[in-house]
Length: 144
Image (cartoon, rainbow, N blue to C red; front, side):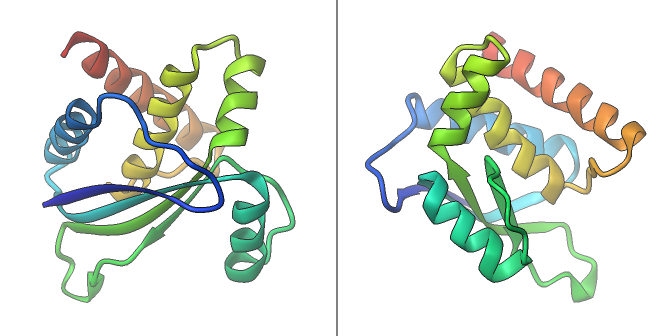
């Protein structure tokens, strides 16, 4: 069980890494999944836009791209992932939504994990479920 934090194109590390790791493991466990490895890679908009273009053929800025690297052929519930996060987008969104940077960062961190646990956000109903799950997870983080 590894949760790693890296940076590309910028210098950034989240605060409270041990608390974040424990929180993520608890959330994953609550969905009956197991973390094999999650690599969070913090970057700038330009770096993430290139990934978005190269791998997803999307020419848009985004705050997060989650790659599911698990072998799902056996329908296991193991999580192996690379999650890329634009710190620039998180900063801008925190301002836009009038949130503290760390709260918005935690929302994005858990958003990727929730996708890996099977939650979707493409439809209005799914997006509402995702937001509710994020809010619940953020409350757990705040109380731990």
